[in-house]
Image (spheres, rainbow, N blue to C red):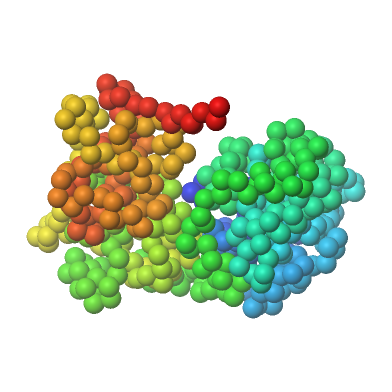
Length: 468
């Protein structure tokens, strides 16, 4: 028996390759499915099943394409009603895979079709649980992503989740290995652990949602507390996963069209395409195409694209580091952004060599900022609210990057101001958005709050008002 977790850090997502006696099951595959096919071929094995734990909101799964290429059936749990052909498993239904058995356990709560898959080994012993978004390490799936279905409420889903955990998962043996669909950094939960698998027994000890003496009312209150609004692209990804999508190979072919600076500029003007610069932030600061948006590949690329670009149908033109153009197209497609029209051949250097207009960004070191702060306290912090409340520059204003598009009016249009994040990535994203909206009187602080703390700029933590 082979169990391989294929973890994608940018999405904080785990897909699974399971093999027994020449037969393979794939759970929650990524959109680019050829690696699964190649691996099975190398093992002289056949992909027999494609299991989906639910209709994913944070990424586009590869289930449809993988089924088309292999003939393997797509399996969902009860209540799923996809537009394509699929096997809708009954609660407790068993699937033989070589010498092992995979059992569908219907565990509604994150969504109503959410299903976990219990793996029973060749000796008939429960070995692993592929828990999808029902159970994470240190957390459980948020119950607010499916609330628009019918009249069901967040509290209703949380109630279902409580029952699913207590009736289906917690009675299982403590030595079972839990393999979740997501880890730390995913927006599908609140506070997940950095580890990507654990024993169920340990989770019963450390996961707040699995406390043995917890009442349903306490669970509902705790699991719904502190939920941030879901990213705007989530419903679009659910729709793609439920209704189907274009083969990613077609998306890659179109998106990796090399364009000269002249053609790039012409297509941008004709199509209304967004110019997305995915280089390192330091390169973008030194020079970039006017009104382009920076979201670098070497940060939380795909989730930030989904959070900040409102329409997944938005045409996109890429400015990418040489050799990473296809990577950018693939990672965009993972969150449903399929309309990449091509990339700038020769990168930004080619743009400059063609004597095209370009822009730069004012940016200073933390040390320079520290000196200016003595007389200039117009500072915007684009970290999350929780980061800001933990510790921040005194008198700074908090405008989280995820909500930036809704708060453009908060930024001054005449007086200069400083913008920073934790390490320098998010602040350049924010600054690029502001500049694209005509707000150029900004100064980026390099290295972010981490570097600022090493200076003498006064910082403060939020203190809760006394309740006495």
